[in-house]
Length: 290
Image (tube, rainbow, N blue to C red):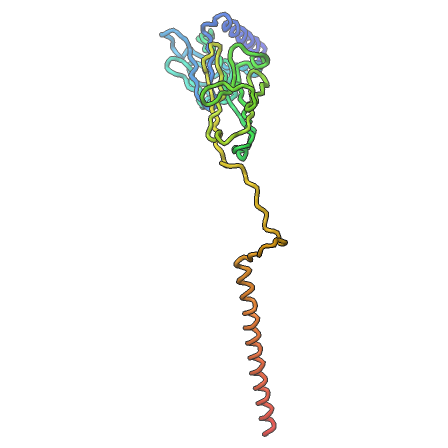
């Protein structure tokens, strides 16, 4: 890339940022979830021809790319298989991932029309499946990936509020049952000890915008692998017990069969020895007669 192209790129970024600040009415805050879909609007005149439209993607301090050029998705875009341009020039993005969070700008002939700021909600759990049972420890981490994490997540945000809620919608607070750990304004962890009634309970990670309306949410269902905690195993009876000891059936059969086998072998051995003795005596008499 030449120095002139670098200068043009910097000027373009600066003009886009200035345009967004100046034309806040054309800026859109959009929230979605990992695996979800998003439609990024382009507020253009009715007679706008999409062939003059381009879409750019910018993630604070990390990357800047052109996703759409001349109304068509660029083949070299890493999102190309998930992007499409609608007839009204809006940008459809499918199967969202965390790296899709960022600033998308719709431009006509290089002039900014609409800026869309996309944030993506996701949750993870370090808990194992075997902990999903009464008495188990459940930990759920909820993260909001924003268009500018370094600025929005490093301090309390006035643009959004991230929280954990019960299945009835009530926001969970720190109490004897729930522990909430706030790493940043974009990351919150819920820790709780599961009870029997928590089987198939929904735990909701949600983000609300500045108007306090729920913008996006994801649910986790604590479906128990074991209905009851593992019971202590009963030790085998001690050999010093005063009561009668019952032998297993296999031992009883062995005790009966073994003497019978010994007697049978002894009988046939004795019978064979007797026959050999008679044969030997008959041979001796025959020799004496001769």
